[in-house]
Length: 153
Length: 329
Image (cartoon, rainbow over all chains, first blue to last red; front, top):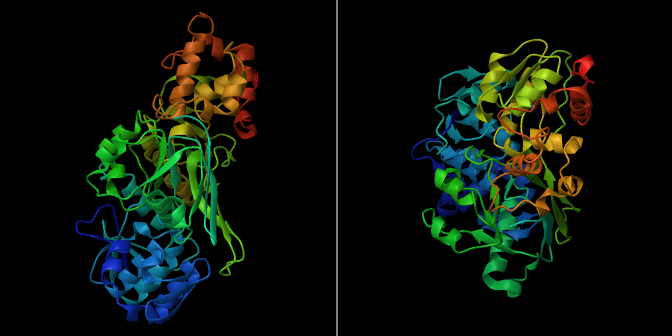
């Protein structure tokens, strides 16, 4: 299941940096990773370290978007906590997909929209609450992000 | 720094074209929209100039900060009259020290961040996404442009009798509580709107009137709440003083010129946000006029009756105007 911790998590990793330092080329051949690349970055993996981007042409994995790099980290290293703030709203559906395969916990410092993704199950790590619709998710997330004692960093 | 600055960044494959016109501009939005690529191109040009293969056109210098997370203060001290771009991932932009640095700076800052910066007053009108046009078929050129993610008056009141929430109990509150036929509450600061909306949920809805010039850090969450609750409307003028100036009820000179292009008059080193300029301008323009003299804490009776009040109501959006007490129009 997808667990979201709103606000700082000590020792959470910044996905784009972690990915560049630690990715394995074979990760890119994974069908789900290929789906991230196609849907978000309009790119196709060609083998080795080569990716064909409709926008940028031939690129290396280090030139993927920060959102896709972070999604790959979350998927391939579910035991680690990554900061999903570097993932835009267009990554939301893929976080849920990863959450169907693995128990993952991500840190988030903005209100990510999960519109059009119902039905879903998200556990709010701060409170333990499990939300299954947009309305409950919205109130649970925003109440934490707007709490008077919320740590701005 | 003052003014609107047109920037073109171009390679054989990509072109970005946009204007920057306030001291704080935020870029956010979907992943892979080209935010980091823009910063990378600016960085390449900054390091190697024309030999980078990046073409750059601007009337001011653009800098990209890519140094260590703990050495930014010294770096910014050495830069003046420039536009500084900071990509996401730098936590220092949320610090009080960074807010202090932006305040009084003669630089403009373009910050790439989805996390709101609650310590800085930035405008709802200067939060942009990047969108592309073109055929997405390499090597044909892809054009990138900025587009505003939010509108200052795009969330109209649909209910007839909403409770009206304003930032505090100063001049704006004093005006709206008299002009509108609705209960008006000063929430005690922009950070309190969220809690006040949650507290005052009711079938007739909630109307939020806030200074758009300083509401940027809150707009995403309030609009998300609006999507969930369905009965929240927003009116986000630059500021209440901006409304008064638009109404033409003072004898202040050059108002139309200033309101048409405020960026040409508002110096970032003097004003952290535009609403502070409009307040200073209105106070200064009316200080020798005992009838029209403007005080933020206590609104003169001149603005609260007769034709003057009616003229001010007249510049409000139609949905807000519809809430005005009949006798005040």
